[in-house]
Image (cartoon, rainbow, N blue to C red; front, side):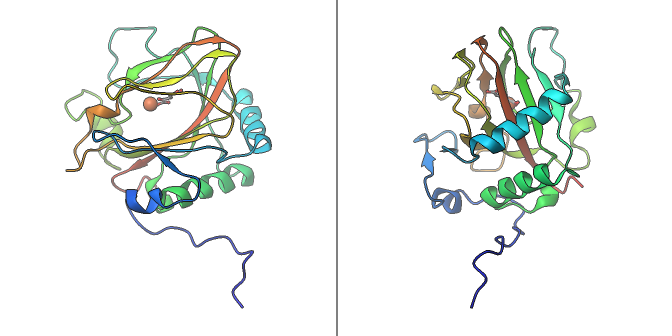
Length: 219
Ligand SMILES: O=C(O)CCC(=O)C(=O)O
Ligand SMILES: [Fe+2]
């Protein structure tokens, strides 16, 4: 008899297969030729989201960006590096890896992001600009970012949507909703159509987790 309670085997692939993700139960694929973007509602339950929010609020620091562009208001949120020695965080990390189908060493540690009223992350890409001055600093070991997984942990009363500006798609925060997109195009180059804006929270507070995968092992 197979042990139906055993966790699924950890993935071993180095990259995600969109066709395989598209076959996940309850998955939605945003129809667009420029960007591979998936949405899965209720990826995390309310209790899991609350556990992550408490950890983010306990350890937050001002968010940073690569390739400083002179705009001191480009990313005004706060960030938390979640502690993967915490079994609760490790279990959620394993679920993200299982969703993506990517082996754990290719993933950066999960970050939390917190946006208060008026805070945002202006339109940006998650990949690092290969021509940017910070490229070697962030990418010489693990290479560039490949996939982004992001989960909304709550719903601000107003604002805080994620707008994919090039493809004209806006996603509303919803507790437990996961977004997953490929930051590269079909030929494996950085994809400018992945440009997205974490829009200003107008009322309430917004928390998300972000999980980025790399071309080569992170650690
Ligand atoms: O908060 C959002 O909606 C987007 C967050 C984001 O794009 C990021 O952290 O890279
Ligand atoms: Fe982003």
